[in-house]
Image (cartoon, rainbow, N blue to C red; front, side, top):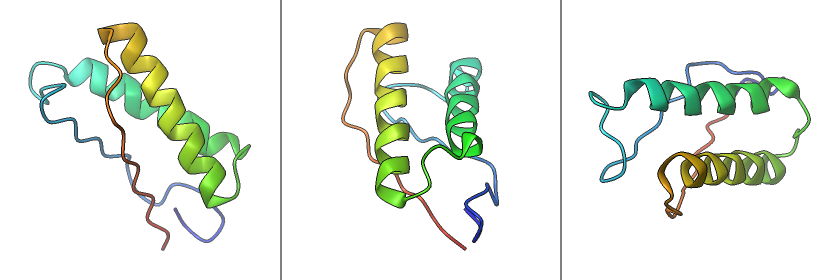
Length: 79
């Protein structure tokens, strides 16, 4: 994120053991789009709230699509 809290680069997802970048590219892109939507909405300005919003949204999507509840780690880099 830049100093204004906007995306400074594309969202990157790594889900080893859960999704394959080759086989599940469409689903991974859907998850990345949802993360971008959350960030761009500006509703979560502080780092902790953004972290929780992204983590919970991903967890809900994965549970709905795959029926799994993985441990999710979020890394937000501010530049």
